[in-house]
Amino acid sequence: MITCEGLVKIYKTDDIEVVALQGLNIHIEPGELMAIIGNSGSGKSTLLNILGGLDRPSAGQVKVGDWDLLKITDKQLVEYKRNTVGFIWQNNARNLVSYLTALENVEMPMMLSGKYDRAYAKQLLEWVGLGHRMNNKLQELSGGEQQRVAIAISLANRPRLLLADEPTGSVDTKTADMILSIFQRLNKELGVTIVIVTHDLSMAGKVGRVVAIRDGMTSSEFIARNPSIHSRDGSSGSGLTAQAHEEYVVLDRAGRLQVPKEYLAALQINGKATMEFDGEKIMIKAPNSLDKKEDIEPNTQIVGGKMK
Image (cartoon, rainbow, N blue to C red; front, top):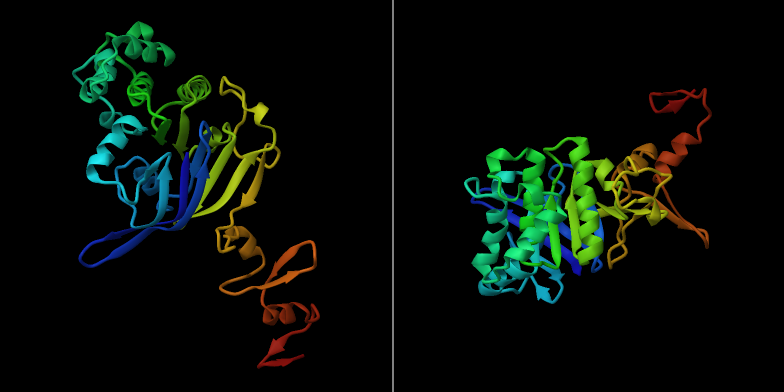
């Protein structure tokens, strides 16, 4: 469904140039429900904006289904955003029109695209548990209910891809579990591919695959050891754990990988490292100069460049 190869995004102003993505690689299968995690400034939101057609890539390859987002025209981009991708913002104000009812909010994108279907709009609100609230104005709905309306809106034009930017960032734990349960149901019943960007590791731990982004590149993946433990009611799992997930470093086409920072720190590796292959394993070690220091007897002192 999604293929990114060597994806680069550079933001330029008169005085500064910021590289938000620097050769990111990621592949997402049709019908997959997965999460992307990363610290602030890692590039995860930039990736989501590019996949949503809200920002243009600078270089590399990025394809969603049959769409090449590097070469897409402005006219094609409008069609892509209307028919292929749905977007859920953390800030409800970006999803909803305050003076309309829940049902009218879901119907509006249908009207704009010429695909008006009131029965389907009502069905979407039923799916997100708001069938009894569809005629309520937004000010009559709680924050969690408004976020569920936003999910229904994102599916109004039957997209193949659903992008969610911190969908549980402003709700309590119970509502967050309910939202994840909705995602799981929509993923299973509609077959829509769902990509969630989140800081919430408890939420990330309840999907089958999690991709970590660091410094604008894919650094590692966490894949559920037993996907069946992620129940369809969203109740199991409390985060990314060694018992539930296997961690993998990610290699790009050139064979490059990002070694976790904590590993490098433990080995006191900074800038350079040595590598050895024993026929079965690849070993990464600190440079020889550091190894020699470690071979010195424990009680030996170095004074003025001489050993005592």
